[in-house]
Image (cartoon, rainbow, N blue to C red; front, side, top):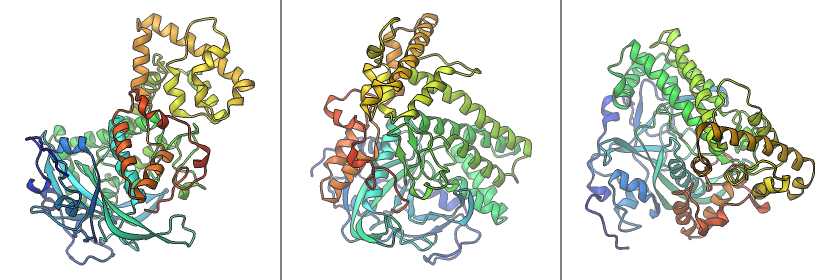
Length: 539
C-alpha cells in the first residue's frame, strides 16, 4: 500500500523516543521476567515478546496526526513489528509499572502491568509528552498466572472504544493501532472450564501517563514512603506543573484537582450511558482519564442497575447508577494512600471537591441533554419522573435522548403527537398504547411546559435549544452488538467493519444517513449473545 505522507508527519521509526519515567524513578533490582512479588520498585524493565507474523489491522488517523506519526506504508513493515511487540526502536526502554489496588472493594495486593508494556515517550505536535504502551505484548513480572497476551475480540473493543470516547468529548486514553499477532491465545471466555484458542492481537495505547490510583496504594500498603513521594512529585512536576513545586499546599491542590477531574469524567460517562464495568482502584487514572476498556458496555435499555461485567453480576457493585459513588470511594482509597503527604483537612477538602463538582456538572449535563435550564439546589420533579419512566419499561437511552429534541413543545397537543418522535426508543411498541403511554404523555406535557418557560426566560430559540441537545446527546455510540459484528468480521479476516465504525464514531453527534443501521435498538439476536450483553474480564 503506497501512502502519501504529509511533510509534517514522520514514520514511527524516525521518532526520538525518551525514557523520562524510567530514568526518574526506582527500577526493579531484578531483571528476571517471571511472575513474582517486586519489592521497592516503581517499575520493572521488560521487553515485549516477539510474535509470529505481526500485521497491522487498524490505525487511528486522527491520533496519528496528533502525534505526528505517518500511517504505516505497509501492514507488515517495521511499524507492525514494533506495534505488535516484535521489535524495539532506538531510545525505547520498555517497562511494566508496579501497582496494587482494591478490586471489587477488597485489597488485592500487588497487581501491576500484567499484559501492558510501555515502549517509551514521544513529544506530539503540540510538544506534549505522550507514552506509547502495548497491551497484549507478553508476560511481565506482574502477570501472575497469565501469559500477558490479549485476544482479538477484546483488542478490537479497546481500540474502537478509546477513540470513540475521545470523539464524544470524554477524557480518555487513546489507541493508535491494532496489530494481529498471527498466534493463537487460549482463553476460557465464560470461566466454565472450556478454554478455546482465539486469535491474538496487540493494541498500542497512548496517554500522557498511565499512572493509576493503585500505583500509590501499593507504596502506602508496604510503607515505601520514598517511592510514594518520588512518584507524587514526578506526577506533579510533569503532569500538573501549573500547581508549582511539590509542597504540602501543592499536594493538597493536586489531590483536589484529581478529584475534580474524576468527577467530570464520571459525569460524562453518565451523560452518554457508558458503564466502565470494572472500576477497581487500579483502573482509575491519576489524570482523570477513562482507562482500561475491559468489560465495558453502553446502556441499551435504560437501567441504573445494569452492569456489563459478568463477574459483577451478583454484587452489582459497578452498575451504571453506582459509578458516581464508586468513584468517590476509590478517591477515598487514594486519599488514604496519600495521607502521609497531606493533612486530614486537605484530604477531606479534596473529597468535597469531588462531591461539589459532580453535583454541579452532572445537572448541567442533564439540562443540556433535556434542553432545559439547570435548576440548582431544588428537587426537580421533571428529572425524577423521567428516570422513573425510563426504567419502567425497556427504553433505549441513546435513541430516547437524541429524539427528545424532536418532541413538539406547543401547548395543547394530543398525546400521540407528543409521543410520536420517541416511538423508536421503546423495545415493546404495545407499551405506548396503554397506561405507560398515559404516564409518558403526562411527563412530556410537563416537560414541554418547562422547556417553553425556560426559552421564554432565557431568550434561547428552538433551533438553539435543539443544537444544544444534539451536542450533548450522541446519535452513535459503540453499542456492544455493533462492536461484536466488527469483531466477527475481523476474526474472519475482514477489517471493513472496524474501518466503518472508525469513520462513523469520529462524528457521533452528526446526522449520518449512510450509517442509519447503526442507530438502532439492540436486535433480539444480540440480547443474550456473548459479547453483546454482558462480558467477562477474559481477554
